[in-house]
Amino acid sequence: MRRLALFAPLVALLVTAAGSAGPSPRTVAITAREFSFAPSRITARRGQRLVLRITNQGTMDHEFLSTVFRTAKDVAVETSGVKVEAGELEEVELEPGRTVEIAFTPTQAGTFPFWCAERFPGRLHRDLGMRGVLQVTP
Image (cartoon, rainbow, N blue to C red; front, top):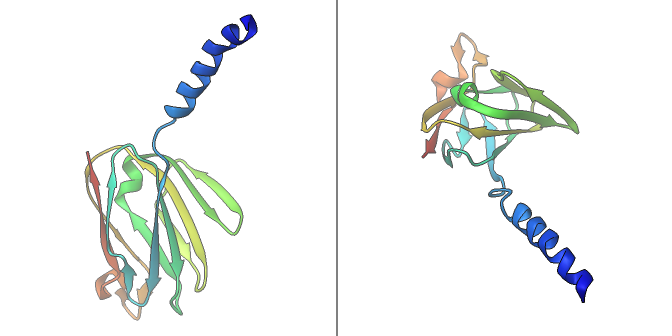
């Protein structure tokens, strides 16, 4: 019985540490196609890990750019089993049929646009409607 008493504080510490790991990441599936993102409006909480799983279901190359990456921490990009830790992410390119995951933690509340900067005879996909907004709440 005495041994159990010695381990009780250690067990309590481990349970507390596991419980304080924070909320699990939130995953949002986004579909890219000519000339839209669905959904085009995403809400996230500051400080909560967010994973954007973007699939290009279109027939053209697309990109995903957002100003939120400038204010995020721990940005990582994963595609086809390859994971890249990104200090400063500007854009992610998507070939037709490909899926990419962008994981990050928003550090500032605000409204952050996202868009596709590919060109379609002289016009950006963004100007043809391929854009959206990521709203980060406090």
